[in-house]
Length: 251
Image (cartoon, rainbow, N blue to C red; front, top):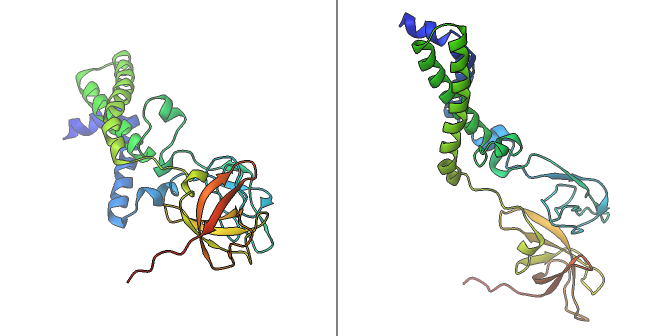
């Protein structure tokens, strides 16, 4: 047993031993407290949009931003507020839904799973390889070689494992304008005309968005609280086209 601890605390294993303690502690805490990946990573990487715009304005395709009184869809999304103004602008937030992280990990072929899983695999594999190498070798030059081999083996082994594991962590699908076409919305303005109107629509993920709506009909009877069907999107006018729709009653 003393030989095991001596190897675990010798170079280069000691470098990974302390990291392994952190990894094991993290997973024990996760198991005991019931924390999910989202609680640690702060959600699925939906970008937040900040700036000035018009309520419910739909800009270029992008993520859903957050503002006062509602949600909008698009890269420069605005959010409805009672005064007709909202938020829109540049995107800030982590990329990679599901807590996935891009950048370096993706470049190394280690993306597709939460970063905690990737780091845990990297540390664990590197620790086992370096421990075996420390037991089988002696001297600084040999131990330096063990360190290099452990890093390469850690990367290769993790890359091999994250591919099947990535199937357990499907990527988030950002909300786009097309996701609202065909959905039922609720009118939130006093009326909807060819030049004016807003409605609230619920996306597939359960989030709600306040969007600009118009109707080519002269008097469709679309007033506040009425339901309507979104049947098209006008890219030039940056608004959705709606028609009166009464959902069938469930008997």
